[in-house]
Image (cartoon, rainbow, N blue to C red; front, top):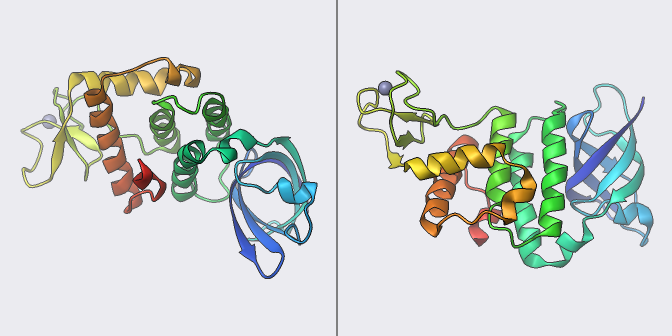
Length: 240
Ligand SMILES: [Zn+2]
């Protein structure tokens, strides 16, 4: 069965001498892997369309339950070439991509996450130095994927509290916490910043400049939460 959709190349793995296994986030089918025959043999438009981050209109062929359908066509819509040409921009995009690949299940469409990823790649390409782009993606992505931390008061009784317990993915008050779990203290400012980043348009990522402390506190908490959720740290995050 031939299927058509739009996809963003998240990663590629060489297979044999000239073939590739391409991981896409697609609009209609979510995360999928596809087999690309011989793109590495010659410098072709088909080959360029398989560069990481490239957004293309794709067709692939395979049985309904095929784990590795064959890519039959791929036409570039946007290459995001500028991101690949600058190492610092590419590392930012890599952290975004790594989180997406590791946390999303395969074959489950999530159009909001697809749209978010596409929009955030535009933001990285247009303003690579924007401080808040990556954390904004992390917060919105976790929310849409169903892994958002719970920060609106104690998750058990609703009382106000500012201690975030990583093993619960939530704030707990003194009465409800068991006392043995490790936690980080959050300020009201960083909880407010979290809420704003969750709601704001991505284009604002370069215009808002929170204090260094606030940013460090919030990104530390989000990274701890991601590390716990994934049961491992993101490799690309180690570059910051
Ligand atoms: Zn409580």
